Image (cartoon, rainbow, N blue to C red; front, side, top):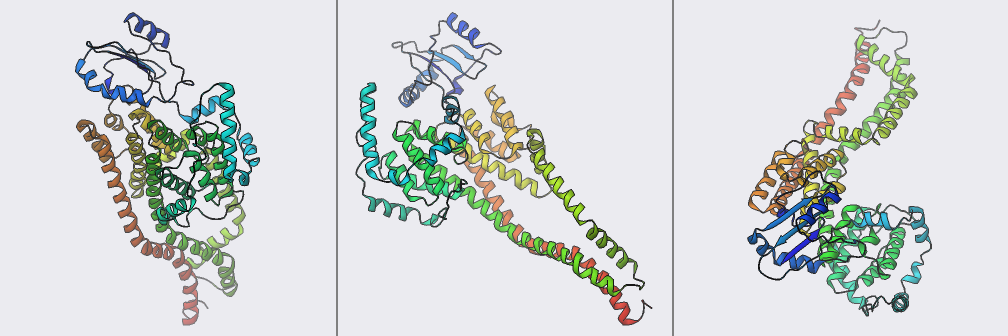
Length: 535
């Protein structure tokens, strides 16, 4: 049996050699010399090949035992052809195409601008689409169009299956108690869809798909469930596109400000493997975990922010109200040196407050503009890892996000290089993003992940050691899960401890700023009352 397939796939470990620095044409010529069958693939026409994956998987043991690799070649554009001969049996060619990211495919095939999509959304009639007859009529139109184009028969009842809506509402209410009230704020025309809304959408999708409801009907129900007006229009648009034959991942990729590359890539994987409900469930669990962690960080930050705000207000009041009044009270009288210095500093700040504010605003704007530069962003984010005490926590938090993404991608059957690529898109820290890109480049060249990570400050030794154990034992995914769970526990423990010492630390901070003012005012008053200092 002969397998010849091209593209990124989950069997990179079968590669035992490469032709480096060759062009695509040169490699194809070399392959032909080695009598390797070349299959040119048209990715636009090729459909998902889950059956082919199963065929290859079922023959992996035979392939490994045969040990008769004729040639392996790696091409610059990351596509490669692998020819495997099994001496006994008939020759058979199997096509295997590389996966194209839905977002990339959309950019190539659909050049609609954001303005055009917004215009399409504004023209959607939600009330009309909420009517079940809308999709019944669309069924007829699609069937008629397919008949005219001789595309073939469409599966019946895929859009308009009879659904017990009371049963669906009960399912949603039962399975979504933990999300009750989240993402349900009235929102008219706001194009910003928060994470809680996406979490609600993902969890409801799981419930509906597990109930056996057809995909388009799920989307129609979810469109009616949300109170977010803009998100409702987005779901209406997605529903219409899917009902016309587009894949869900391609439809979602048209809204990158709502569904990022990570989300869309996971959905596309769920479609290709036939495990869409499981994929949405993993996406929900990951978002819920990250949301809880962020919630704890925000909760721990509330008290110090409150204290700092009061401190700023107190300082402004002191500069413009309290100190000027005491200056008038002590006018013409000799003051202690500390009081004179303090009053001089306060007077300088008060008379130059506009310049100081202008300087702060200019620095902020300059910093924001500098952040548009990728290298500056990388420098700033890498420096965050070096901050005393907090730097290690920031690094562990970024590793947690990265490892959770890898875990979901690997459990969905995505290859390790592609999983790392998804993790790169999912992280917002440019230090981590850049270092992961270096890791990906090394992995593509055949370097183990743990070795590729060793030269980077972004990855703690614990991450590197656990991944190394996973590589050696063959339990990479299990080691990744253990690692991010450990980091979750460490970060949670740190936040709990930080919350306990945040209160005394805030009191000390207030004392540092307020104490000098109290002393500057109290000393001359004490001297006046005792008659010892001011004549």
